[in-house]
Length: 69
Image 1: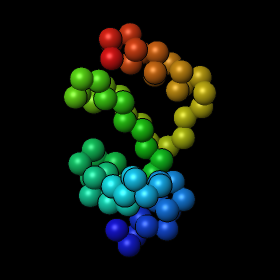
Image 2: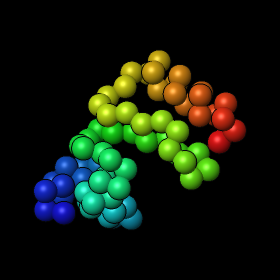
Image 3: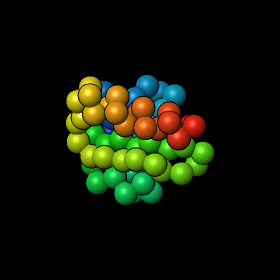
Image 4: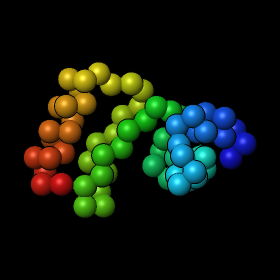
């Protein structure tokens, strides 16, 4: 947690202390931040690493919605 605490403190409030724990990132195969994971009904349906533009985000979220999430 010491490795991630400075950056996580900028991103997470006190009610999201799990954001400091990089072992959670490992559970989802996240090598670093930023990373996004879309989950529907307990299944990872999309994930990507790095920043994504508005058009890309809209496309991926539209696809998620089309799955009936």
